[in-house]
Amino acid sequence: MTRRIFYGVLGAACLVQAWLAFGYPVGLFQDDALHILLARALEHFSFALPGRAPAADPLPGMAAILALPVRLAGSHFGWLRWIPLAAGWVAVFLSFRLLRRVLPETLAMLGAVLTAFNPTLLENAGIVRPDLVFLAAALAAFDALASGALAWAALWAALAGMLRPHGALLIAACGAALWLRGGRRRAMVWTAAAGLPLAVWSLRNLLAAGTASDYVSNLGLRLSAAGPWQWAAALADIFGKGLLAVPGGSWAAPAIIIPGAVGAVRLSRTCPGSWTLAAALYAGGFVLLQAAWGVADPRYVLALLPMAWLFALAAAGSSRTRPAAVAAALCLAAGASADAGLLRARRARAELWPRTLAWIRAATPPQARFQTMFPMPVMLLTDRQAFEPPLAFNRDSWLAFCLSERIDYLHLDRAVGRWSTLPAPRRAVLRELPRWAASTPYAAEVYRDEGEGSAIFRLAQPEPARYLKGFARYLSALDALASGAEPKTVRAGLLEAAALEPRLALPWAMLGHLASDAKEKRECLAKALRLDPTLDAARAELSGL
Image (cartoon, rainbow, N blue to C red; front, side):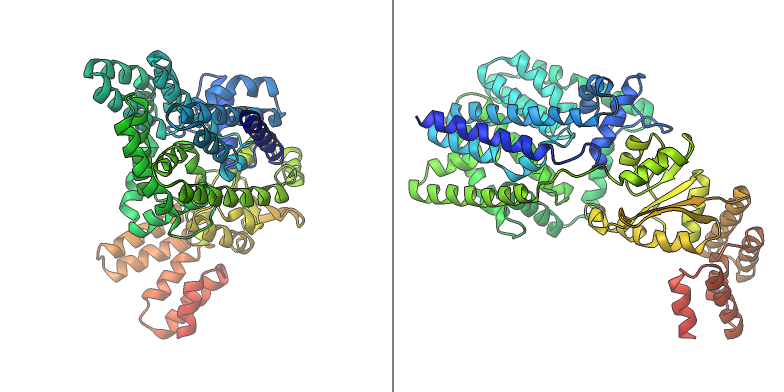
């Protein structure tokens, strides 16, 4: 009877996943559009976005899985949501199989239910990203390892390694566990087999893109920029919001990491097989990797489901029953509350900017190049090339970038709610873009939709080479100033830049900043502001006079 109720609950969870999955249009997110575009490129034996260099990021596993479905679906991208949805169902089934191997059946059922109704899993059920496919592959690798099917374990681990960066961690953890429990030779053969596709792909990246993986370089940058506070905040968001459904709260991460560590040590010591040790090593490496990555995104917890519940329940099972039951009930209540919020907010949303994208398809040439803060959806849904704006700090620099990249149109999105996932510097640029576009004579608004919060500007400069030459001369003058050149030389360079491109405001702003005479300073700053009213620093300096 208990088993029937349990399977009924899991079936209900699968229905909830499907209900939520069909509330998200495919192509709405940057990542899902990116993988679909790369899947299209694989049809032509390429792994690059249209008009761009070969991509070293992301890994090609999801694009390879999508290649045939994308070809069959054509422009009906909605069918693709069945892939992550099915992967989520497989992950729930494998969760119970794994938990039942080492936990009492009641605790195994509880862990499977906690996994099935995890709000982060439900929220990502229909998003065409590799997270849920990676989760299913990782759990299949652990299950095969537990069954002694090393060849299948290597196959699933190799697939995981081609889906997410955590796959390399999974391969290393399984190889280390086999070394410690099964002997060095077998571990080396298994690790070589499982890691071969990833090694070959890294070599391809090195030859085609000049780097083995963008993930490694990005991790190095984040390590140098992040501090203990960012690490703690990232773990609190991943484990607190992603696993325990508690938004914020620095207590959330230790509340799951500490008992999880206790359970991991306990299972590693008491279970003779290698899979529990591999899972413990993988979970420990995951925590360290995410702390170093420092990105507070609950979605990353999907790479650890249901391992976190496995170790936490293993620790709870060794303690008194009542506290463990209370803790499990609280986790279920928190998750149910978050799930109820998802169901209440669930609504089938339409295509992103449907009227704006329809106008782009109808009114712009196929070879047009767009600049937008959401390039992947625009590329997927319009078949136009699209690029992100640069991290510019003023209008002249932004326009120079547009001209150098031959940008034809600027797409603006004023729906601030869609900016929340963007980094702060990107959000700052997005706020300034409407001012920059409105203040330059080289941009003209050609479309606006107040209902969708979007606008499109046509960028046209009659002599882009002249503009870029003037801007380059301005940069040369700045370099001369930084290297200690004579003021006369710097001034001559700035005047030459202004003569080459009369619409450049930055040379006049710098001339005003360097001028020692108050009248000259005032005249130069005023001229800079007439050319570019968005130069807030020049306005502040002029007001100070």
